[in-house]
Length: 118
Image (cartoon, rainbow, N blue to C red; front, side, top):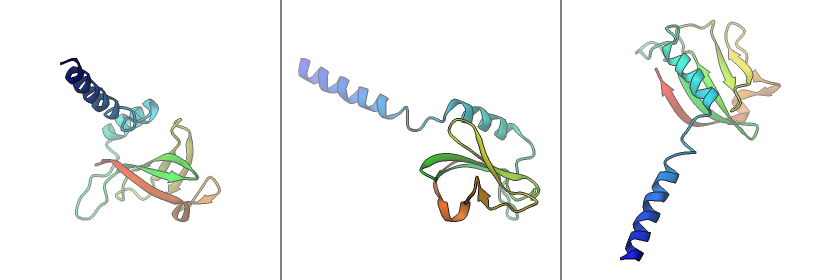
């Protein structure tokens, strides 16, 4: 009976450990996401417009967070933040910037996961 209780406890513990940690956003990124979701200038997804989103990318051996305001406002830049909420660069916008902190974005960024879509 003790052995069965041990196995059940071990299984429950493994589920609780795996359900936290990797899926949690850094606190500062979660705060930025909360502000982003509440911002009425973030584009909504429609048939003619790409909505705003938050996507993680692997960029120069680190995970970065890409806040894209969407296609309805071409003057807005796409903001790229580190896990420590340091603004690494701004892409797009009126200048159509494609280089992030001295590195071409398109050839060096790999999408990991979409975290939010408006």
